Length: 279
Ligand code: C5P
Picture 1 (cartoon, rainbow, N blue to C red):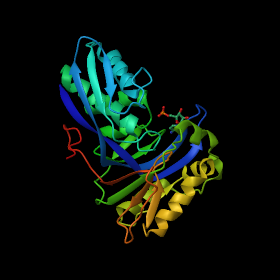
Picture 2: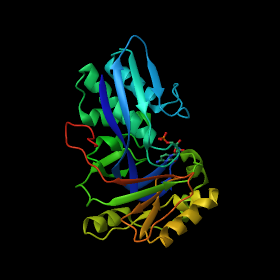
Picture 3: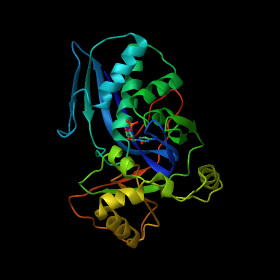
Picture 4: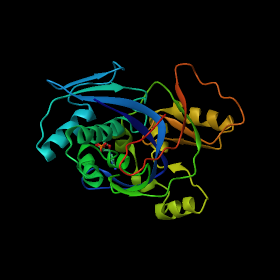
């Protein structure tokens, strides 16, 4: 049996450039892996089985873990049954890439268990067949992602940052946020310049999906304002929401509604040849 941490991600900035003819959106985003994580246990078994600590998580074929297993089997021709248990901590419909990270982690686990010895960059390509955010997790944990998200360039680790994450119970589906986005009405920032600015030590935090998500769920805008009033300097929605990520420490205590998901986290990176090591 193999047990691996499956991290979440945040988008330090997320620029949406245009809607493509295939319905996806061309984006440019600085992705960062964080210490909030699930744990995945994978073992060889007599038949396929997926269980999860959270009863709300679907364990059938719609779960991205099974899509990853199918992709691994199709590419390697290896069809051994597996028993997988998912210890879930990352909220769903949160924009934190929980399901995508699970799929990437499952690919890594199957590669280890099977002895197939597939190279990281090949697993990364297979990940793109599962979902746009899956390839990122095969980076070093800090990456500039373009295309629909699947073109991944690892960058030097960012200076670590204390994070506070806050999410109301209601989620938003990625598909619906993108469907409502008016990509031609966004501020025409140059994302390459944003990355350069970051590397020069002048961070720029923004998310082009924020306004659309706020219009679909007004409670989110109010929550962002509340967090900013609590003296979090940079508050940003993660991916397509509905998590809000506060970068840095606050000088005032914030007491959210008790029904909200909250956690503290930090940036994490991984070394070549190893998966994410999170204490
Ligand atoms: O690739 P993935 O299946 O994770 O994408 C989920 C949905 O998010 C897509 O069906 C699409 O509606 C939207 N999406 C998009 N542009 C992207 C990534 C996702 O429009 N770059």
